[in-house]
Image: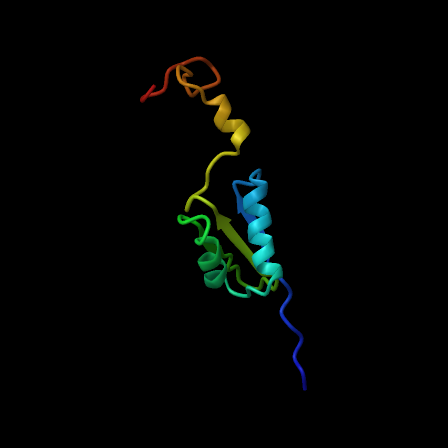
Length: 99
């Protein structure tokens, strides 16, 4: 009896607004990468700090992989542009402990 191939994973990419990163990651998966480790290895050819983690929730049947270009979560580019030098880091104008 033949088994059905596992469905492709859903990728949760960070940063979500990096189209080149998204395209490269999706291309690897569409090209046959079937494990988080293999995706991470492939991504590191172009993005050396990339990390891929499988979400493991009890009873969840879908494959969801968290894919971090910089090895950690970062803000989208639009948010990073708003964090210009001289900003307090708080919306109420109060200085933060480090700012």
